[in-house]
Amino acid sequence: MEKVFETINIEDLKSNMNMPKTVKIFDTTLRDGEQAPGISLTVDDKINIAKRLDTLGVDTIEIGFPVSSEGEKEAARRAADLGFNATLCGLARTKEKDINAVINCNLPYVHTFIATSPLHRQYKLKKSREEVISTAVGAVEYAKDHGLKVEFSAEDATRTELDFLLELYKEVENAGADVINVPDTVGILVPPTTEKLIQEIKSNINVPVSLHFHNDFGLAVANSIVGIEQGASQVHCTINGIGERGGNASLEELAVSLKVAYNMDLSIDTTQLYDICNFVGYLTGIKIPPNKPVIGENAFAHEAGIHVDGILKNAMTYEPISPEVVGHKRRIALGKHTGHAAIKSKLDKLDIELTEKQLCDVYNQVKALGDKGKKVSDIELQSIAISELSTGEKEYIKLLGLNVITGESVSATATVKLEIEGEEYETAEIGVGPVDAAVNAIKELVNEIVEIKLEEYRLEAVTGGTDALAETFVMISDDDGNQATGRYTNDDVIISSVVAVLNSINKILAIRELESKHEN
Ligand code: KIV
Ligand code: ZN
Image 1 (cartoon, rainbow, N blue to C red):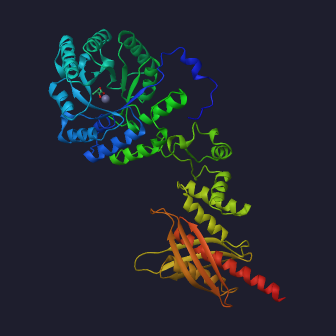
Image 2 (image 1 turned 30 degrees about the vertical axis):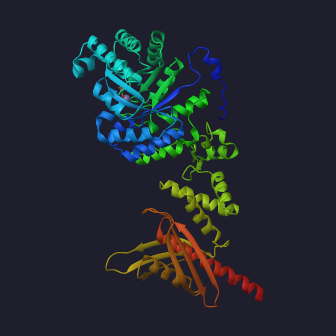
Image 3 (image 1 turned 90 degrees about the vertical axis):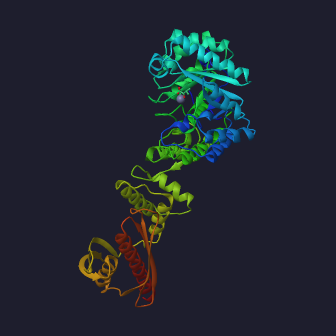
C-alpha cells in the first residue's frame, strides 16, 4: 500500500492507543445491508455477492437470518457448501428455533442478539434486566452446546445503562460467548462517547470485542476507527455502507482508512473494491452517489483547471491515493471549470494535434457547453476537435446571425446573416425543414462568389439524450468541380449543420484562391 504524505506520523500516536495489529472484517452486507428498505436479493444474488466477498478477503460473511425465510435458509445452505475461506455466520434471536435454523444450514458461527436498552426492554420485550440476562445466557449456552462459534450482541447497546451492559456482557462471556459485539443500533455514538464506551468494555471483558455501528449521523466509519483504536479487534461493515436507515459503516472506507492511514495489515484486497461495490450497487439497485468516498465516480475525477493542471504534473497533488489502489480509474472531466491543460492532455491521448488557435476554439466550445450545464465526454471532445481540424484556416465567410421558424403545416423559414469578404449580407429563404431553409439562404447569399451544390449531408448524435451533441458532416462541390468537406459539432443541430456548410464553403474558397494564384 502506498504511503500517504504525512506531517504527523500515525506510528507516534499509536503509543497512546490500544490498537490491535489487525482487525477482523465481519461483513454484514447480506444481512444488515439487505435489511435496507427497497433491497431484496434472490438466492443467486446472495451467492454471487458472497463469492465476491470471499475473494475480496473478508474474515466473516454474515450470510443472512436463516429462521426468517426459506430463501434465507437456501442461501445459507448453498453458501455453506461452497467451502469459502471466510467463515459463514447466521443471525439468530436468543431463541432456540433461530439457533436451530443456523445449525440446520450447516453454518459454524451464530450471531445471536437481544435488545438491552430500557426503551426496548419496556416497549418491545417487556422483560426485566434479569430476564434479559438469563435469556441471553441461555441462548449462548445452547449455541455453545451445539458446537457453534458464538458472537453475542446487545441490541441498542449504546442506549443501555452502562452498569447493566457490562454485567450482561460479563455473564455471556462466562457462558462461553466467543465474541462480544457492541451495536450502535440507532447510530447515536460520536467519537468521544465511542472511546469511553469501548475503553469500559475492554477493561471488563476478556474475549474479543466487535463493533457494529450504524451511520445515522454519518459517523459510523469514524466511530468504528475510534473503537478499534481502543482495542476492538473486529468490525462489522457493509459494501457501500448499505443497511438499515443511514446504513452501516462502509467496508471500502474502513478498509482504505485502516490500511492507508493506520498502516494496518488487513485481509482485504483493496484493488477489488471498485468492482465489488459496483456489483453490489447493481444487484441491490441502491445507486452509488458520485461523491461516495473511495469508489464513487467522482472519487478520482478532476475538472477544475488548477486541479487538472496539478494532477497532470503529479497525481498526488490532488489525490490521497492512486485510483489503482482500489481498482478505480482517474478521470479528467471537461466542463465549465476546465482549463487548457486538461483539453490538451486529452487530445494528446487521442493523438489529435491542434494549433494554438484551434485549441483555443475547442476550449471555448467546451466552456460554452459547460456554461449550459453540459459535461463533455471524451468522444464529444474528439468530435469537437475533429470539426475544428476540418475548419479552414481562413474564414472568407463568417456566420453573423441565424434565425429559423418552423412548425407543422407551414414552410420552415431561415434568416441568415453572413459576413462575406468584409461585407454584411442577410436573406431569408424557405425549405422543407429548418436545415434545408438555412442551407438555401446560405446558397443564395454566397451565389455571387461561388455556386455550391450539397453532395452529401450526414447528421449524427455523438452521445445519447435530447441534449446530445450533434455532429454534421457535409460534402459540397462548386461549378468548377472542386469538392470540400465540412464538419461541425454543436448541441444545436441547425447550428451544427450551418457551420459545417460554411466550413466546407471556406475550404472551397481557399482552393479557388490557391488555384487562381497558380494560374497568375
Ligand atoms: O443494529 C443492530 O442492532 C443489529 C443487531 C441485529 C445486532 O443489526
Ligand atoms: Zn444493525
